[in-house]
Image (tube, rainbow, N blue to C red; front, side):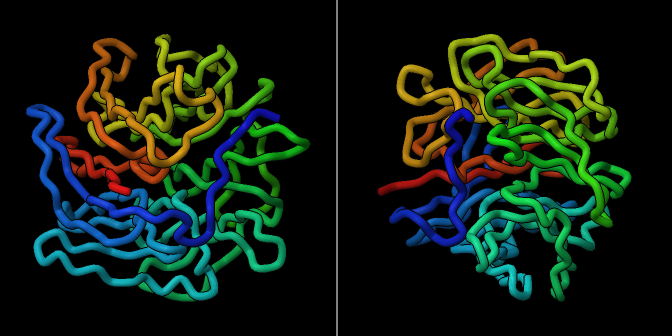
Length: 291
């Protein structure tokens, strides 16, 4: 089994967090709020006015205009890591919660308005990364038989489907806006690189080919761009995405061409784990850190 940075269920490092937004055309960064502790992984809601993030195992909604955060009632799922996804209709929140019994991450669904969680993946560990546009299927990274691969499962639970079989770590499985492809990252070529496959697991195609370790490909809502986070391969092992590192948020066209750096920052784990595109595809939300 390749190394994988383990998610933690609670606030796990001392850090000042800066929640920011970057314009993908100009590169201009706007700092929204500074937190005196660790927050992670912002999602952008479709209203364009609200972000969602992880804070110490709980999930919060952040109103951009007022700067006010509101805790989401996730019931007993209060040990969530930074792998969380909203349903296409934004009625449901999918979280990766570390159960009290064994500390392993399992996927649960809970109403965004608050309510009782529903277990989806009884087998652990499982880390949620994607929700199909038709609302019917979840995509996730899971360790089974000492290997991390990409799986899908119905939102009603049941039998999971394994999509990748390459040795080593496959992670970050996320649907594109039309739902025909799943983007993921894999160490199968040496460094961690971005790949794309059909939703049934066929046509697994490498999309980045550089000397960085590239994680978490997020396709913009208009389907034209892909954002991802890159580590210096000389400083970080291919299967590792630690916190507190100098990293880059980069962009490329949907066909893998025109790769460019958007922001250089101090971050890593927690910066860009989930899709943080604004609904108009013009901005990204991210978290940087000071220690």
